[in-house]
Image 1: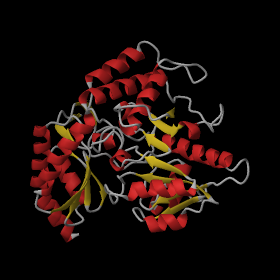
Image 2: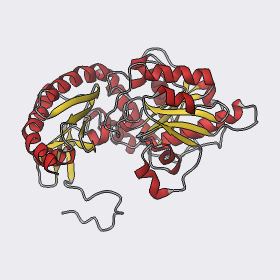
Image 3: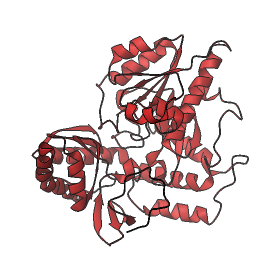
Image 4: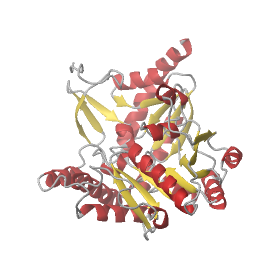
Length: 402
């Protein structure tokens, strides 16, 4: 047992302590093997200890780790260029610019500050439009501003009063959004392409396109949070690309460094241009070590054609899950899947799966979330389905009794 007395109690006591990983496999401090179908919450999308990323990080650590943003490094512009091209679909550049941070929350914080700065400039120096319309059940981070944007009252309540100007409407409800987006007070709409923490909720097929049009018509920015869905996980480089739109601002993090902390905020060039030196910053943002990890991760993702792999493997995984008794539905896209159970047994199922050697989690009482490596093999998919099929009956019985 690891002595955790000196750690703040911001997380529940962990049931397992992992010490090693390779590909889709994790090993705990007792030497036991687990199949990882959570990827550190959609972070290690190339699997654990990917050779190209591990080599890049080791070589960079022995060369230059940090210099601060008072000086340049050769890696950040290259990574920014690649991200801009991927936002455009992987072919031509999208014509935007990137700010590097250390997490998804920081990427979203940058997006919110950028939107507020843009609204002030767009108004010709007059009244700033600080309002941001967000969605119920959304999750955007735990800084005060991103917590205010998060549509979960139980997370917001303990830290009130929060920054003002954030309005929440039901997800996938264009009429509610239409009523909330007053162009005299609202500067941006912030939305997830798929709501991960809400239980992997996918909106109607035309929702994002209609949100895009509404924002264009009202003269407000569209910010799409792709922190969990970005970089191939849903079968496209970014989930918004399934709908054929281009947001004004896109945030990305989790998979970008394959486990090394790094986030990014991309914005159309004319939107990004409202930032001046000193408007925003991050001591560690864009540092050489993080950029080496990001560059290697993106290169491996392109070489492996991860969107294509995610679409194919996701179809296999979804089909296997749907065949399990007690599974009512499978939501999601690619390799971000929510397994809807016939009873509120997700916590019990997660615990039983872990005991059987499979890592998943329960974002909702009746939903399991699966986000395996984008390089997961067919044999690993079949093994994971077999474990869930074996443990779900007892877990569902426990859920019904409760």
